[in-house]
Length: 193
Length: 193
Image 1 (tube, rainbow over the protein chains, first blue to last red):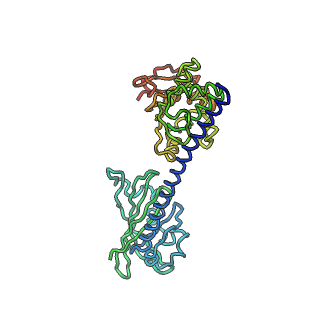
Image 2: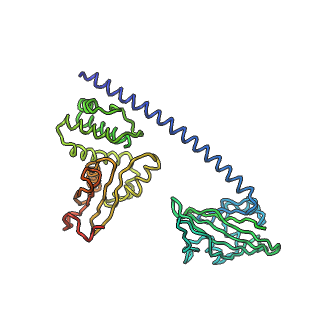
Image 3: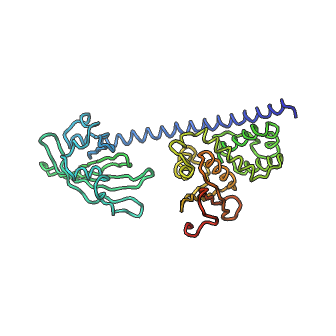
């Protein structure tokens, strides 16, 4: 077999491989586009739910910086969203050991509800801790926070459940909170009037 | 099996043995794809076996030897193609456990359909033992990869292979024994599970 024929055969193999790679790339691109589309729709849906929820929902990262603060939370804490997002969550609560333990359970000596593991690996909310919410220099209200944990793919997930008792109105507000994936966390409150 | 294994085999044969042998290996292998592989594709591992058997016929080199040599070549290519997996690792006995816990995890993110072997690692008295299991009979390939890994890091170790299961190359244990270590195989009972 001549060398030219050998190189022609090799070229033919390369060409067939390239076509297959192009087909695979097209498939992957389509799949990625569709997955992104689904994610966008889910994100919009989640944003709409969070934003229109009657419950106050606060999301914050591991450094305690607020990332999500919905309209109901703004009403509960009587602070505008734009003032709170990007600031420390500690501003929303009176300083105290109970608040930081509830907000950052990993730093506490004993993680809240550490013994409440269900067979599925998730942990039920328990051990509510009462903390004081802050509405500014003069407004305070009692708030109960508890932590539940779900073991996710990328590490533990924490969800927080809190109950708030709005003293002036005697309104009870329950607050479960979003999730923390080992990096960040979220706190949510909902009105249960 | 991922296409990169096929493309690297053909490239190794072309570089080391020439285009004539590579062409013969492919044309006499009776494989479905006839040498047209793309690195991002997925193919039946039986095709690789047929290619290596064909190469063995062409070169009169035993299949296990060819596969081990290919394993060594493949490791060098992995170092060149994926340097990020080698950052911050200085010794083979630190790198090899990462195959299962880190590299395969990353591979699965990109290629959820990838059929990967498992490398279960345990350490006892300074000896790292890796238990290899796969759907395909590629313990020789794993041995070549491990040997090349030890060479790459310059670890003063020898690799002892212990056949497991049906002794068909799908299941084997590799013990990485420091040169200074007095241990002789089979593994001491205290180290066995």
